[in-house]
Length: 527
Ligand SMILES: O=P(O)(O)OC[C@H]1O[C@](O)(CO)[C@@H](O)[C@@H]1O
Image 1 (cartoon, rainbow, N blue to C red):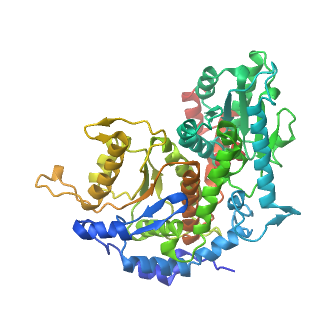
Image 2: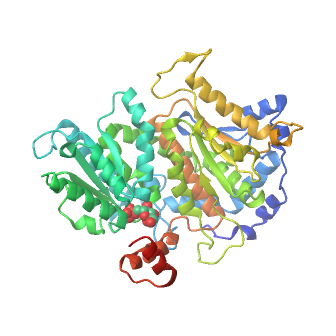
Image 3: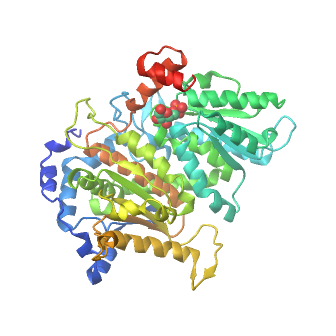
């Protein structure tokens, strides 16, 4: 059994702390040696991706210290315990099994006589069968016509991941003739969200997936009622247009007002659930079950790499540990995720939840305060758009923000033009290469307003093309990175008590049970 210790009690961490500002990346990335670094500081990921960390502030000494930390913190042993069914989510007394939704990494995990891998596969099959029947016109609307659009109603993990993945594959599916149905999403309790989406769909031919693991989330239940109201007013029977994805113990599971219900369970956290029915139902309906299966295979292959004890052959653990070095030794407060791919436009939003809801904690897994910083602020936008927005601060601001670039050699649609001797795809890629070197090396200028200090670390994940498999690998990479960082910080990365207080106070406001500031704000907002 692995032992769980606070980071600041580990001798390898003390050693690592002595390596603050050990590497000058401006020097290391300049000239011929910079080129050598780019060639050498790279490790393969699944689905043909590469994790390149040449522009990170590491060298053989820092990497050796990180490997020692990985060993002393028993990161691989903890990962093994996790996928073999240990109660890793101490706050909620639950196992953490999202890896089993894509592969069997260790021993079978059996709960109350049910093999969990078999359960997740059976639910994926249920979603696949439902999707195939919709596509074949075997499940149709009351007029006997095919459904043409699918709308997901959910929030947080029941929205962000599936939405990011749908957007990521929409063009790929169109280019590869696997696009079946347009998907839309309703998440916010702001009535303008549901109203705008409903106004944009042909209700008679729309299917709605209500996704809520708990079946109690205010926003989702409100939006479900909003949609039912619209269907009824249009003379349609809501139960002929809706299905649910939920846990077997949730109130939604007891309802017979759905075409079908696809189940998940308490061992897959909302922000890790896009590989379960939460993502499986909508992605199978939109693109076909085979595309979702390819995504799961990409994730499974990345998970396999994450079991490697050799730090330099484990891109997920390496990325995690470099992040710990940046956060705890270098003292950087945030991290930007910058995909040079329009298809990944919502991927940073998904990672915001995944990372910050997991590791935004001040107490360890035993509920005791920790004396070191934990999860960074995560934000991001696709390049090159971000370059014309917040990169000013990234290049010349007073904080150093570590960067995680993602780039692909080829576009998804393959439709391009050659203008001034380069294609748009080449211009996109030229920009990401330029940014890495500009951030690392900077440029001196006597005019300080035009001076670039450089020394701003970045990594890049490079792929051939964004496909279902490479998207699955990317998703798993970041999930595993977050998991390893939570292990290093001795956190429980799998609960989210920090979201509760606001929910309780909002209920009080709606019940008019307020005083003091809450009452004045309630009056100000006309509640
Ligand atoms: O799927 P549910 O149970 O509706 O929860 C939605 C989201 O709400 C949260 O619990 C936070 O409020 C997230 O962790 C979760 O992804």
